[in-house]
Amino acid sequence: MKDKLKTASLWIIVLCVVIWALQFIAFKFGIMQDLTYNLALSWEGIKEMKYWQFVTNIFSHHPTNVIHIMFNMIGVWYLGMALENVIGWRKYLMFMIVCGVIANASWLLFNPAGWLVGLSGAVYGLFGGIIALDYKNKIDVFGAFKLDAYVLGLMIVGYEVVSILLRISMGVANSVHIVGLIIGFLLIKFIWKKPTNEKN
Figure (cartoon, rainbow, N blue to C red):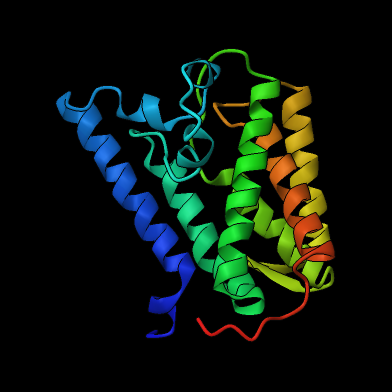
């Protein structure tokens, strides 16, 4: 447990939870009214030269949606820890930021209005990274059964594609998930696959 307290994955979770708590307080009590807007990614923000949004939106979440942040943090805890142990915390942080920035920025191509927050693009990047490390690696699915990593990856992509085609979004940025998974796979497969000697 002490080793886990030193991981970048844990500190990403802490950062996201603290930011979400501030967003929730701002929304609930009517203070810092523009906090989420200034953190979220949007064309309006880019036009106002708020370029920090390319990064801040990754670590922000919907202020009233607990499930949104909860599932992302579970993904970071399980998948993030596994990947960080292989590539080291420095490469892992770069991996998360690169996946998050590219995946979330791709959302702008299909959405001229609205705003985006969330770590989902980077979390799906973790799925891609795990698949790239060992596509036959068995992944525990909710403790019920295990699937080969590549099978789970194909199922995820299939679900996201069907959701896009049938327009079953439910407020979820499905294209971001697909892009994140692909970027994560490519980064680990061709750039950061070799284990590192870094100590977490």
